[in-house]
Image (cartoon, rainbow, N blue to C red; front, top):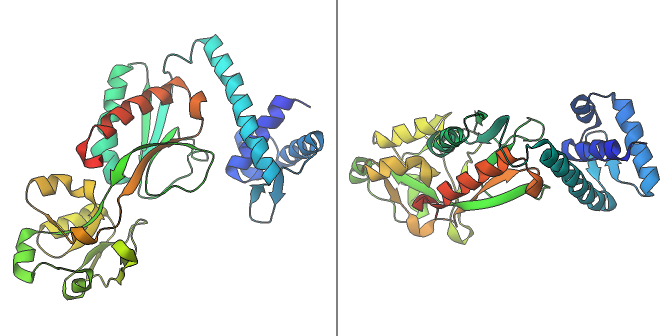
Length: 296
């Protein structure tokens, strides 16, 4: 048995939680993938994966073995890349995903600066308001806003982001400024029905308020535009309304009741063995994002 190939197949099965997806990724048949994993389990003398009708999960022994395989395969890839001369110089195409507005406002300028610094590079962005599996989607890196689940991915924190309630000054003059979360029932609420949205707004101390939006929009930008026009109150991430706050078009309310800010991370699969194109972008993005006072 080719031990190196078996490790690669096992790692891919663990990451995708699917024999079928792994088979497509490594250009093998699903039965062949199953046989390789079974042979590997027999070789190491332990059950590495638990198979159900819906997914595949690592056992406790499998999780430890997965970490070792990643380290070993990373060392091999690093040695090969160094020998080929690709480890120290970014090359190829960098694929990155981020939430739509964050991507447009903050990631895209970093991407263009990165491409200017490395003229031989190409880049592909996927700005979308849902979390995608970067391994399955063939992406190199993701921006995640919020608390991260446990995973085998490398995460570098670049800052934190407040969840704020805001309205136009004209609206607040006309309808009054809410002093407590309970006052929201007396106001017109504009909300997004995107994947980030929730019918319940949470506040410090575990307080929760169920909202009844008068206007629902399918994009965050539409919600912000409605609030800027003076139509009602809305709740968004602070960075999304930074320009409007600076221009005096929106005003934050109920600041004393805000939950702790959400962490912002750069997430990528390979850790210290990441290719040069990823490490170079991460270095630049960390510098730019941590240097922005909005993320402090």
